[in-house]
Image (cartoon, rainbow, N blue to C red; front, top):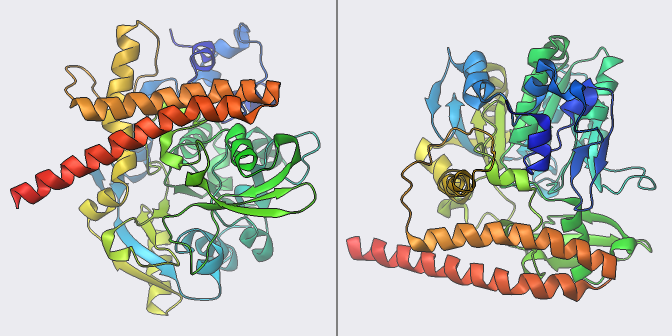
Length: 454
């Protein structure tokens, strides 16, 4: 019998807040900068079927395939890595300054404003900067925006853990309709809540997912600021991706602001643990996720990392539609010049996110097989890790990333306690250099094999 206690103690909690909401408890931030429910883990309350069904890591029969099939199964094509889909596009916004001020091609913020303009929703549930940080260590949190200005204020990427319990409480008192925006695990968590509370189906008619590499703890933001010269106690805010004609769209230049409102711009890959896909301060649960694109959402939005768009300095979005309504809005806007879209093939969509897909498939199989050999409990996922065969180089890469997550969490916590950034940076630097060496070696071998076959 799987339990919430096993999920939390095993590090498989995504911090969605569903169980805390249903039990009228709060969420709290642990020493590693991650959300967990503030609940007695031995409480009988946690064993009820309603609570366990709300948890995205339990009841594997209610997985992404089951949820998506119930919504989209009769309409659209299915792929094992992308899920159901109607159309796939590379896109960017032409009108106003959405593209310049938003992430990638600007489609995310644009579609939210369009839904509000067309009165299809009364507001947007999305992640915004935390307004009151006095009693809240988080830099970002879920909020509701009900006008265009407020929606635009929520643009840009948020590599930061969030929880939904407070928003679910607010929705109890609000009769409006909303579009929900989240990473895949939050979309799945919301879909589970909609199965428990049918009122949420009417209140949230649209669910939009952002393509997700993984979630970062609050401590990752503190580590970026500290590496840029701002101590954790003096970091006021952080923006993870800034745009400029001089900044390559693949570069992640962040802006850290201290308590004196001084801004520092820094390329995150030049900070120890700052290169996103190295896995520093990754939420441990992300190592056991098998959904990259938000398969339970009506629309998926991400970066179109394709060779043909390498020089698009203002960014280009990858879109995966699973809704007739949203697909029509996108195509009509293309016809009248508001946005630009071009259809892409399934293979192109996969290529654009090949690194994430491989980490969540091949890498996931390895990580699950390790837990299985140790006889540790783990959530049941949609991959079969039995008889796993993997070349040694890929295995080293996956295991090093796993180690980076583990070491970064503990060493940064100790660095905070000792007020010594070097305690973190020295321990992590060796691992990140090792990872980069093997990643480049793998890339070189792949290119050599490709050229040999030609």
